[in-house]
Length: 190
Image 1 (cartoon, rainbow, N blue to C red):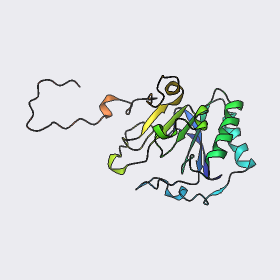
Image 2 (cartoon, rainbow, N blue to C red):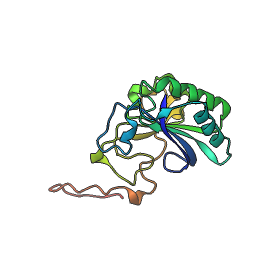
Image 3 (cartoon, helix red, strand yellow):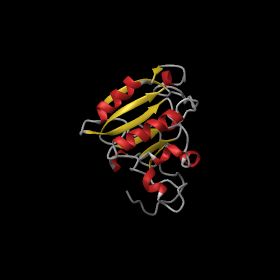
Image 4 (cartoon, rainbow, N blue to C red):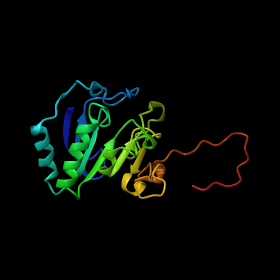
């Protein structure tokens, strides 16, 4: 596995203060991606013992809520096995820290992956610039979902995701639906 960066004290990629591993390799190549430098699986630098130690040093801190795997795509073939091994090690060493994963894949295609046993929250779906909304929580476009993996896997049908949080931190941030012209309005609940 290769990576581009390890971000410390991050507040933008999951609940609480986190460490973020930005892996190299992504086949989704979303238009206007915020991190296209991570697409090349041969880019960045080799993930080695020093990088692992840097992550563990951050996770040792009591105020760090957990780790987020992003990129690139942690589920890219160049990453998936090493990401799973690292997640297993983190889960064993830090059972009270949360693990978040960002992927361009959709939940319905990945919920049976072995790596999901270690993930607490997954943000799924490709970034769609036409659905971009800067007020969304933990995601860039409205098609993406912030999924509570543990609750979802406890359901009778784990293909139907349980969302971790609403799309917006406040109802006032949600876009107001445009009225349909020509249709009578009988009531409106806001």
